[in-house]
Image (cartoon, rainbow, N blue to C red; front, side, top):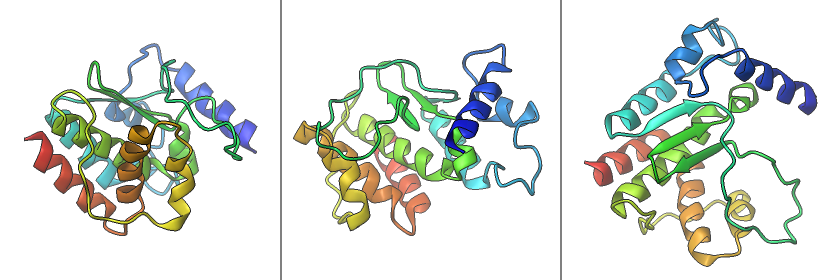
Length: 182
């Protein structure tokens, strides 16, 4: 099943002649256009995407480019993903959202996660900086940020996973983006 999901998202990406695709182009090209489709783009996703763009970020719906990912622990027991679900490239304020997240039904949490990295980028004035949030992570999120070797990377990822897993994650992400990126 995973192979078919990956294949279909690769096919969706390969159908475009343009390598940098926005949510609106992706949506308007006929992908996920049925409002009753489980892959429909939520209004919150669209709104958050537009808010990020308003702060100068470019949101691309495409498989993230090859990028030097932060080293992870060798003893991490989960399968290593070849390409991440989302990626913030701080050097050019680009956010990449892997199309497979729509099929998996996790597009909004992934964009929220990257939004927190965008807020960290704004707080650090061009470098990712911990926001020092006073929120504890849920137990299920801990393996995702504790897999990073570097403790600084753990702190950065911890905040993104903490917000992503809150019941009010969308509202919290919007407020943090507004607070730090104005």
